[in-house]
Structure formats: structure tokens, C-alpha cells
Length: 255
Image (cartoon, rainbow, N blue to C red; front, top):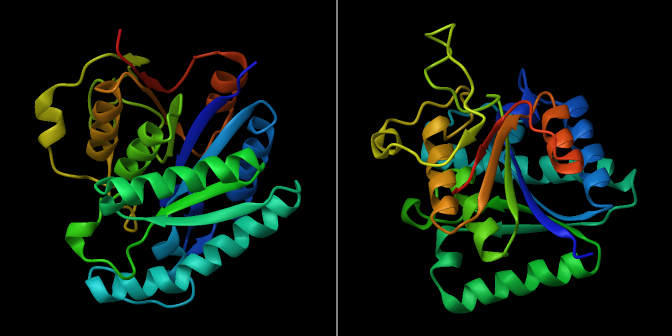
């Protein structure tokens, strides 16, 4: 049976907490990926380089150069933690840094696709992040939700999973309306929702629900699926991927 290919994107709010790497949550994620890899191919898109850098160096991340410095400091911290944890499961990892331009150039895109295919064929877990250290603003997606949606499409993956600090897509703002309910299946997105301001919950995040909706729209336009759920409680995505049980979270797909 052909293995399914899954892209998992984890947000910085899940990876870090109180100016430290959230090691227990990271280990839970690594353990889940190790289980998924037994029956699926997995690509990990991780945020957290800037927030990891802030654990060692407190700079004002609102300044562009400070953000780049934080990312340069945080990237090895982030990858070192991933390396140590994946070593527990004898899983080798690779690091791939991309920009929006890598999907606009046929040559660059093919190279990226070949790297992904080769690492997966050899049992290596590719870990992808945006290369925001030596690039200009117009070369970047600006958030890893968009990056993950493009990776999902260009690697011909079956599903994008967004592990976030929110547990699904609600019919209203849950922070303002206590009666707001999660929409379990989404087959279309109101164009006005895609034009709203980005509202990240974490000071190190760059997205919020709008970037997640844009990622979902990008994939639905290409007949691909996205699943949005909590990164704090991994039982939701575990149940969905391994057992097909969909009790929580939001699945975005065309009818």
C-alpha cells in the first residue's frame, strides 16, 4: 500500500513558552511524528527560530535586523533540540530553508522537490523553515502557514496539518463570543475573511487565523486538504490520521 504523505506545520506558540523551548510539547510532537512515520511519509514545517533565539538574546523583534539576528541565533537552538529528540527514535533529520522565490523559479523548485524526494526515500525527516536571515521582505512568505501550503502542493502531499494555538476554525471569534462553535468541515471560505488583518495570539507569531485561511484556500483551489487543530493536545490529529476519527479540529476540503 502506498504511504500517504503528510506535511505537519507547528507554530511558535506551541514550540516555545515563557521565553523557553517547550521541551515536553516538542517531545510529544516528535513522538507523534515517529509514530506517523511507521505508516506515512512526513515533512515537518516548523516555526520557532525567532522565539528560540529570544531565549538566548533579548532583542526587539519588531526591528527587522533584530528579527534576523534572533533567527540566526535561534535556528541552531531549535534544530539541536529536534535532533536530540529524534535521536531517541533513531530518526535522522535534514534542515531545509526556503523562501517564496524557491517556488517561483522552475530550477529552484525542482531542486527543492528532488531534495525532499531523496530525503524521504532514505527515511530521513525533512524539517523546513523560512530562510528569513539573509533575505529581503519581498522574498519571504512572511508566515509558515503560507510556506507549508506551498510545500504541501509542490511535494504532492495528501494533507497539510496545522498544529496551532487555536483548536479549529470557529463560526465566530471565540475570544469574544463564548457560544462560538468549531466548524468541523469547511468547503468554502468567504473572500472577506481572507482580507482581514492578521491577528496572531503569540508575540512571536506572524499569522493568526487569516494566514491559516489563506493556506487552506490555496490548497482547496488545488484539490488538496488541510486540517487545523490544537498543537497542545495532539490526540485530535493522532485520532484523525491513524484512525480516521474526526471529533475535533477543522478539515478544509472541496466537496
